[in-house]
Image (cartoon, rainbow, N blue to C red; front, side, top):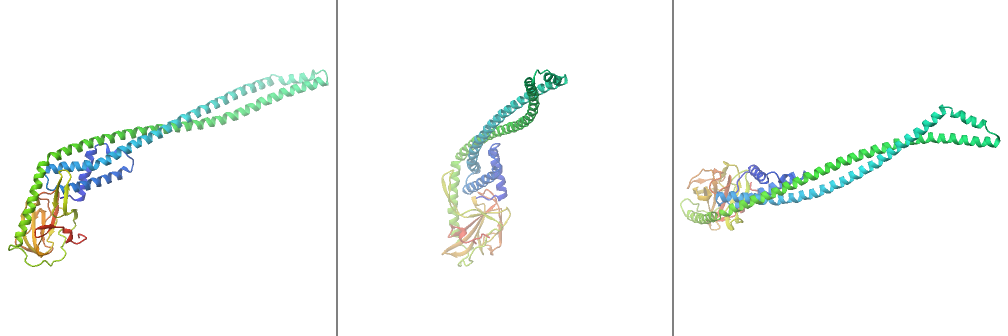
Length: 421
């Protein structure tokens, strides 16, 4: 029977999962891991709710061990998924890092080519500047007059033409040298721009490669953390399983006692239906009133299988989780035929409402923190008869509500409003 309020239960399970996973489980993935963790917590919460419902009659040590085992078992698949995710992230980031490293190598090579072309262009400028300097020096020293003298000293018209062609070639050569210097300067500026761009691209690629490599290393650390968490979780689960198995004999004895107790309740109620406190007439009350307000159904009626100790047991009622001290109201008018302590039911009250289907119809209320009525007392529909608690074999504050015909348990949801309100 699981009666912890939802908020308290979530806090408990969150703490349990945090302890189990220590430093590993939450570190294996990016932002979506937060949503995954909430899903894992919900799954673990539901698993523990089922475990608590099954283990209501188990020993305290067995319940504790089985609860730890349940949480570990519920958390293990998520932990294993995180390992797989982390390993995939390692492979992906390593691939990206390798690609980035190759790109950085390529951009550095491109920069070296651009730098070589820039250096070559600078050499051409230097050479062109030296030749132009020589031309300027020669001009300053009178080389121009030398050309005039060459023309004057011609011996004839043909010799003059030849000498004029030679002087023209010299002057054209000088102009070519000047033009080459101008072109070399233009080239060096262009190669300088290309080299600068290549350097910036190479630097950016190198930084990107370093970042990707760091991401790959981080992913490897996370993968190792996730792997260690799975190992710890598996060890924790194995320890919890051994602890649960060690309680097998004690738990089976508790189950036998609970079975005997159920038979005693049936016989006691059958006798009480013929006693002076029972309602003799036919039950005509119709649909029952919800015995607690603002509660939520935490466990159903029916046979349940204990996977830890391999036992079938009947859960004879429906559980409604509510805060301790919440008023419990009579589901229908009738007379109290049982009010007191009753083993695993703790404080237990039963009310006779008359005959239904040829046998006595009773409602019973278990695990009360306080009983507010006494045997023989007549109660009205909706009258407060006790308070919600966690007495007897209970794992938290809740009402265990039963409907019985001839002492035999029947599913209470058949008689309560469908909205449970």
